[in-house]
Image 1 (cartoon, rainbow, N blue to C red):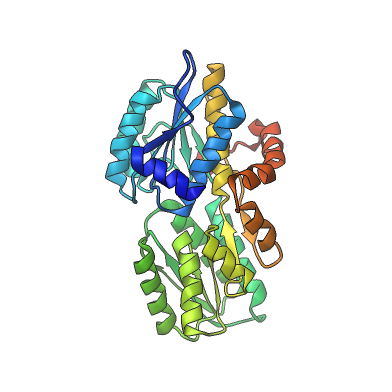
Image 2 (cartoon, helix red, strand yellow; image 1 turned 90 degrees about the vertical axis):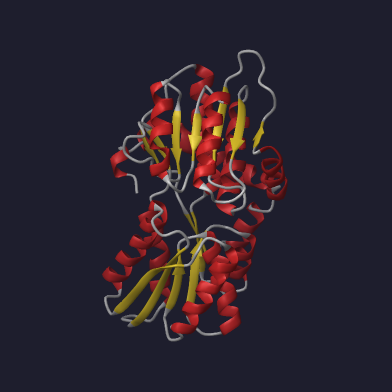
Length: 343
């Protein structure tokens, strides 16, 4: 399914749920890239959200690789072709301040997704994780597996330094170690690069430079599978883990190479954002305001088989999430927190 979605995006720089019928709302979803698991998950979840509402046309737009200026251009195109509302996930929020503010001035519905919109963007609704809490929970699982009172080094890496959501994940990890294992020296986060090959080289170098480290923890999806590969290459008893649900990363948890994965539940996040946008557009209403956190999920040996089965197809994801989605939307207003708290 993911490869099919990528193919559509590469051929047309957008995919949609079909031509709009007369009077049918037209909404858009702008994503940072087509070639990373997180964006593919959000795109597929967004399509599920549009399908769940029905009667709307969804256009998904993204550059082939992580290229913020290219995304800005494609976003401008969405402003013309998706006049009833746009959700946006990006990795350079400062570049989108003016484009978002311009659309807000035109009363186009806007939803920030995964990355908190920068001040001045005039976006009133944000759907994203509590990234600091997610980083903290992953670190706490590592701490649980380490000896009581352990001392030594823990190495952190991030595939895109300066991206707020990744920085917050690293901050959560640091906080957990400082609180629970003050004898541990946390190094980094080091720049582990976005490109998968460069990411592996970075982690391989860090593992060799710190062979006695207690753990290596990353903030992104490339970090997860490349940390596992580096451990398999170099050996060692240290712990490794990072984020997202790439099939290679799930396999590493299954075989015990990685002790866990932290899933930001990108599929559900895309679903929530686009369902909220589609419902508002279809009803001709304004969007609610605030921060909606769809939650995160720790994947360990205990539940990796279940989550691997869930991730096997779009149909399996929809079946697994349907009841959870209805529970989430049952009292959505009560789940909204102030935008100022988003992290």
